[in-house]
Image (cartoon, rainbow, N blue to C red):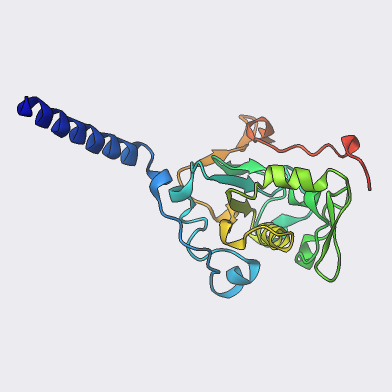
Amino acid sequence: MKKYIWGGVIGGLILIIVAFLLGRFAFPNTLSVLPAPELAEGQRGELGIDKNVNEETIDKYLGRSDAVYRDLRMLEDPGNYEAIGGDSKLSGFVNGFSVVPFPYIVNVSGLPDVVGETYNGETLFHQHTDGTYTANYEESMDILEGIFPRDKVIFLMCGGGGYSGMMKKMLVALGWDENKIYDVGGFWYYGGENMVEVKRIREDGVEVYDFYKVPVHEIKFEELTRK
């Protein structure tokens, strides 16, 4: 009888070890321990980009069940981002991120002069010069909390890092936990293995953008209740 008992115990331990190893290799990203948010040095830090969780390391933190991943670019931004080495159209994104255009969330300010005029249409919120925010619609806060759940870790990305830093600043000002929000920087500097190409060149040499590939959080202002 003892042999059967010990055999069962040993067999159970072996199954646990095998399951652990399979989980570690099959889902390595879910096991990566997140460091606390920490600003990078220099200009990147001024934008709000994280020192440890950024374009170079984000692949290690993809696929977490306790997190959401948001890309804050517009599919087609009217600003001239080519002037600062980027692109005005969303040419690609990191797999796992979904797009919610930051200029639809709140009015944008503080961009480099060479970018020129960007989107100035309807927004969920208005940012005042004193750094406070006012909801423009009855549903604005519900939408914000739906896209950026307070109980989740939030990874933010954009083109160069500017929109991401502005988004984190806004969320923190509205009561989100700053220690659960990571500005991972800009897609323009991403070179990892999880890139999804949206821009392609047809055989006739014409550039086309396959926006159908992009998961987007739609904000239908015409269906909202203006305050």
